[in-house]
Image 1 (cartoon, each protein chain N blue to C red):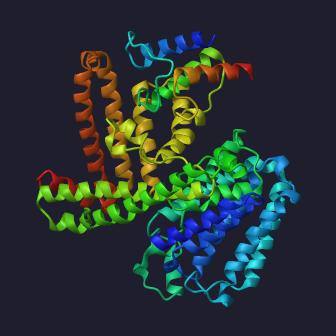
Image 2: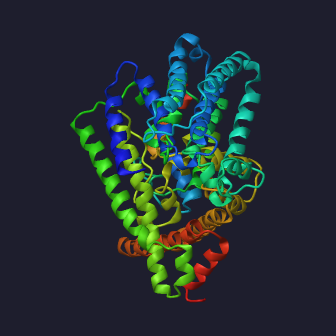
Image 3: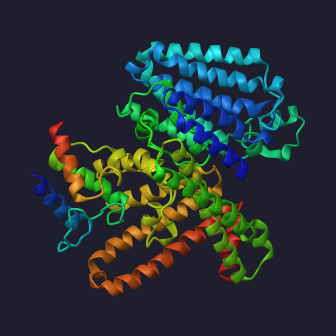
Length: 83
Length: 471
């Protein structure tokens, strides 16, 4: 399940945020701290995750401390769905 | 802060770090005492040097009352902290009798007045705790009140602020100015911590904190004057369970303190002699020299600010805390977004969490065009960050400078990401591009400092013209 979530989010990032459909994003690749996605794209990412998985990511959680990689974000989604 | 101040604080931190039982009260008592001690003594107009830290403590007590959760409100749990704060207020006030003039002013208000203040604040807190049905009104009033005080404190020579009256009463010349008269030490950081607790309480995210924990979080002396702006939930974990002071902890704390003092008192103070100023801009016509002065300022402000952060983190570690980092080699970043992820990190995160992210979400939900959202949000966020340093045209222009830069960078990235893939996929070309981008970003940031450090837009504009040999 986590792998599916990671694949879906990776697809969104490559197509919609980075505009590089061929770009592969590793499960442990830093997204925020590396500057790969900026703060505006981070809001877009949060909206996408919320719409797709029906979980809430708070504005104060949109930072590298809460999640910085696909694996961490997918883990957060799974945890929220279980709450 | 002087070196002797820092060494004294390090000794205090070491002692406080030894406490296990009563740790939060020890942190609270020491922090409350230190904010009196650090308050600039030259602000002593009508005993303001006493009243300003007192106002901070009163504000913290009232904000705790309006944000506290039910299971942390009992008298039994909170009377020790109330007693500690009252004792600090009275003890400092009694310096009029002790006469330790080298530590704190002896011109303090009469003790009966302080006793009355303590009673009034206590009764007010009880009322706020009891009448919880008005909590939304409290939160809105709290936010509005803190923003209003912030505006008054941060606006230099604000007309009608009563500064002239106070200066006249104290027999001081008017040119002493409001900044000195009302120098409220640490208020920028206190205000942001208080606003964070109200917003998180509104959203149901604030952890349950008793008075000792809440007040320790806001007043914590290592980060009181220059940050970082910690989050309450992170801070309180280490207040309850401090980090162990092992060999690694000693080494870490020692290194951060040593590096901080070296960077602040050697590098920053040396660069200060060469740094650009109003006078240098007026007197020096040579662009080469002006660039040198500007580069000196650029490194000076980094050394000055990051030096204090190292010191705060070192002091915090001596007390069993790991404060968040505030700087991460910001001048080696290849674009402005990364620069702002590495410069005054906790302030940027605060603005993202409480302004940028919610406002961006709202605009997205209203289906505003994406480029317009980006433009509005970059300009407004960065202008607010500028104004946080002071309500002046120059700080606003500095914020706008960065907002415009971030917008241009965003649009360029959007344009280039699909068209210049042949560069990004070639490691060597990418490295060359990175070096060029670091150079470009550093110089853009450095040029922006003319707005930050010079006094008025006209002199900043003259500096830019002279830097490019146009005047």
